[in-house]
Every structure is written in structure tokens, then in C-alpha cells.
Image (cartoon, rainbow, N blue to C red; front, side, top):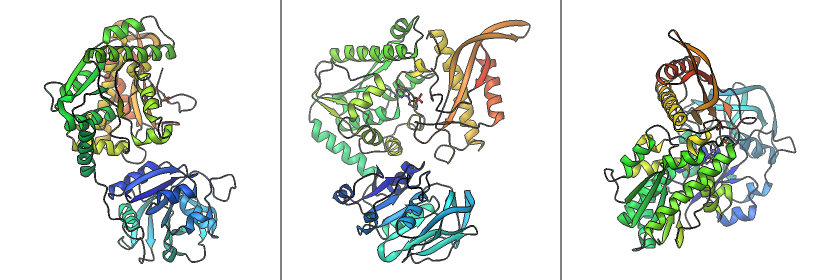
Length: 521
Ligand code: XMP
């Protein structure tokens, strides 16, 4: 059985990040809800278990708790933040509200280097985020690190292989966090580190080749990260047996259609059949006069399927249809049904007229970050690999009211400026870059349907207002409007009104989700 670490999710914001860090140690890792049954855990037989942080207080009986048996399985357990408090509380220690909350970079004093802190400095910076703390350790435990206000910043019971960190080793601000996680994974858990991206890429190519034989494969390429990486894997495996159909619905970001073609088309780097369908006008015609958001989504989704089907019919029967389903989709939608749900979300449903025998999902076992890594290994350019989430219906859900070619052009131009300036601000350190705490989850320009009076030179204008949106989010289910520096907003505003025709006002959307959504439709 492949060695693995199990992460039990107690609702913290860095859970996927913990899994990613473990995998960076070359150990396979899965995140499951904290409600996973002991029997299921035993069946999975992980080499170690990590309990994540979470927003609750462990002494509140309504909070998520763990079966005491979890700590008796003989499997090493590491509790992080809430997980640390949960371990202490469940095993008879004392957890209470700390006299002083700690948040952000904090120096801890390491007092014991027998266990997981063996390789870290005597004083080291970690990322704290807590209002409760462990006041007294359970029997058999010793505190191994502290801060002036937190007597138990870390604790261990080496005999039972139980460990706890009040801080977040997974966040990059914890300067020696990776050493601590790796000490857990390679120490008490005894992992060997057999999970590597190179070997994933190679073994996937090999197994796809075996499975497909000389069969024909069809892939709907959206230009997003998942479908692009899936397509490249398939192309490396079976070359011209793969046909990718890329439907340009005219609702992509500025230049995106051409960028996708440059990578996958005849001038690109990959061996495959690439078909770009320029269906822009067809979508605009269907959308003419339609203002209701759900109606627009439905039209875009359905039209997408029709265009795809028409192309598929031309190709004739194929053996396999490729889907870019990734691991979080599998978890979210329950094993087995994932393909259907994901494609539903992306393009409005599975085509009912594509003649295929089986679905291939080469990325089913990967997290988004790993899909990105695989993409880089496979030679995809960074700007594609680090693309932010983009909805299937594209700019159709970022234009309020009727969608027209003119409005699409306005929002494309404004959005391109906004993205350029955000990238510049990240590079200058004005806002946290990708992967850092507080980094933006999603940001884009949208077109409000509002026109108002302005003045340009000596002339009165009556033009559109663009809305800028930027959110931080951990799971896209809720989100906060990001506190962008005013100088960034100011610069973007000035560039948009000067460079984009028909825009004379720019708004910043300060609303969180709920009550708003992330998209602006
Ligand atoms: P909302 O607007 O619902 O968005 O807060 C949450 C996340 O989902 C993305 N989104 C979509 N993604 N097809 C997609 O593939 C869609 O129809 C769709 N609608 C919203 C959105 O960009 C955000 O990341």
C-alpha cells in the first residue's frame, strides 16, 4: 500500500496548504473531514494523522471533537492550532482563553529538541493565529516550545507519538515550518518519501498509453489550468490520437483565445490535433437582448455543448473523453459522481451526443498546486499555470445586463489593465503574492450596466462604470473584499478611464460573500 498521511479537516483556512506541504515532502497526503470514522481511518492505514486548525473553541461542546480512540491507534498524530488544543483537551489537559491573543509572526523559544523540533533554531519565527491556548499539558506530555504569553507553543508525548503545535508550520511565514513538518513525516511516521511529481508525470503517461492503446481521445480544452494539464499529459502519452477542441465563445479574457492557440495549435509545442472553433458571433447572437443572469448562464452552457457536439460529430466515434477533474472536486462531490458534477459546473453539462466509451481523468489524485507543478514539468508557460480561477461562462458573468461585443471589449481591456497592475503591485511587495497569507483569491474587472455623465477635455461624456473586485478567500464559499492599497486602486482607475474607451467611472466593490457572490453578474 502506498504510504500516506491523513489530514483531518476541522475547518481551518490552511488545510489544503498542510496537505500541499506534506506532499512537498514527497509523501502522498489526503484531506478528509474530521467526521471520518475510525474504521475508515484504520482501513486507510495512514502513516500519520494531522489535525488541522479551525475557528472553534474546543471547550464549547458544540465544536467539532475527535474520538479519544483516534489517539490510541498507534498512528502518530500531529495537532496544529485547533488540532493541538483538541489533542490537549481530549487527553485531559487544560485549554482556555488566552490572556493575550497572538496573531502573525511570533518568536517562539524552543526548550526541548528531543522530538520534532530537533533541527530548528533555539528561537524561531512562526505564524500564530489563536485566542485559546493550552494552559496545561495532558499527562505524559511535555511542553517543547513557548512564547512569553503562550506557555505551550508546542508539546509532545514521544512514547505515544503524539505531537502538537499551537502555530502554523505550513505557512511560509513560519521560517522553519517545513523542517518541523518533515521531522513529523520522516521521524515518528517513518515515511520514505515515494511521492514525486516527476514520477507522477512519467507513470501517468505510461498508464494512459497502456489504457488507450491505439484508441482515439477527445478533450474539451478551456484554456484553464486543469484541462490544459490534462490535455498535455494525454498528448505526451498518445500524441495525434488526441484531438482537443477549444471553443472560443467570445467571453474569454483579453487575448486568451490566441494564447491558448499559440500553446496548443500547430505553431505550439505539443503533438496533438487542435481545433479552435471561433464561435464568438454565435454566442453574441444567442445572448442578444438577454439580461437575466441565470438565462445568460444557461444559454452559454447550452451553446457550448452544442458547438462541442458539432465538432465531435465531425470527428466521429472516439474511445475516451478527457476530463480535468482534480482531487478537491472528487472530495466535494463524492467519489464516483465527480466527473458529471465538475463538467456541469464548467460547461453546463456533459454533451449528450458525443460518442465515447469511457472518461479519463488523469488529474483525479492531484491538488490544484500539484496540477500546476505537473503543468510546469510538462512545459506549460507560467502565466497559464498560475492562472486564477475563471468561470466557464467567462465574461458572461462579469457583464451586468445584456452582453454585447462592445461591452466584452470594454471589460476585457479594463480587466487586462487591472491584472497588469496587480501583478506589478505583487512584485513590488505592496500586496501579498500568490501563496502568501492574505494573498488575493480572485480579482477581476466587471462591467456594471450603469452609464453616467462625466467630462473629458471640454466634452460631456455619458459612459459606463467599471467595477473592480478583489477578494481573499479560503474556499470560494465565503470571501472578503480585499483591502487593496489605495495607490493601486488609484493607478488602475486612472489607467482604465484614460485607456479604455467608453468608461468614465471606476468603482471598487467592498462587499463580501455573503451577501454578494464573488462573480459580478
Ligand atoms: P461565486 O460567484 O458563486 O463564485 O461566489 C465562486 C467561485 O466559482 C467560480 N464560478 C464558476 N466556475 N463555472 C465555473 O467553472 C461557473 O459557472 C462558475 N460560476 C462561478 C467563481 O469564479 C468563483 O471562483
